[in-house]
Length: 354
Ligand SMILES: [Zn+2]
Image (cartoon, rainbow, N blue to C red; front, side, top):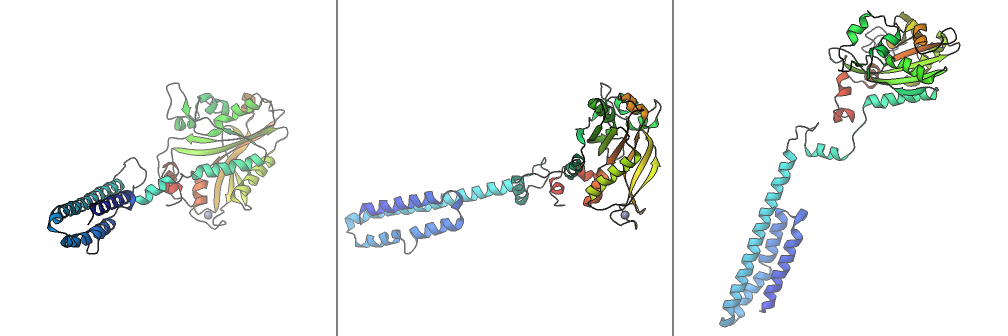
């Protein structure tokens, strides 16, 4: 037996240990390694057998060296096992760690979900769709202010100083006296002034806030899309035609409509635009509160006082305005039961998993 034989076995073993480190490490792999170096048919066993053929002078030192190698193999395999167990415990621990700020359970499955991108809120998706319909109809798009002065929210819109809406709507005020806007109509006079002179074709979208007790159908925050059209000779027929064309594009079907009188201080006359329920075709269902009709928009011819406030002569020009509440339509269209889901930022809801 050459001394070099023993050292080449050691060299080969050390190289194999290095190869095992990392991801390929497992209890099975370690046990295979140990067997192949110390088992019955291993090279080490062969060398131990050869010991008997050596003369007594050489046998002692060679036997000692073989034993040192055997011990080295045993110790290395044991060390590998310890490393593996430690690594596994750490990985398991990480999987079970609870991140209280995460909007999901940190199981392996949901961690994988983190690696993919988020999803857009149904409100954003529907708003984009609505706006694109109005864009094709030739309207300019504006985003509404979320804090505004009482002048633009009420006074410029022909609300008398003692109008009850002021009390219900202006529940909060900033230190500067700004009010969270309860409707997107605060933009009407601003937008008309922006155009300076008719024709004015504008659609405004934004978030609105009201002092509401929150439940599955009421939210303190909601979305509105508001439209304005001012020009010479604009009539009630133009208003009805515009709203109808939009609704048919949005619901992707012909609609049956009716109007009923309504009152808003900033229009005269004011109407409520109703659509025969697109879900039950007028038979009566949960969406239409069993009336067969959906209230989809408040609208009306812009009050002469509002036109005057915007610097437009009401004797020369007329116009109409309408406001659409988005949230309830989005709930109905997507079969969502709880209005609060729209604001909860729950990734499972946004990805349509729940
Ligand atoms: Zn219905």
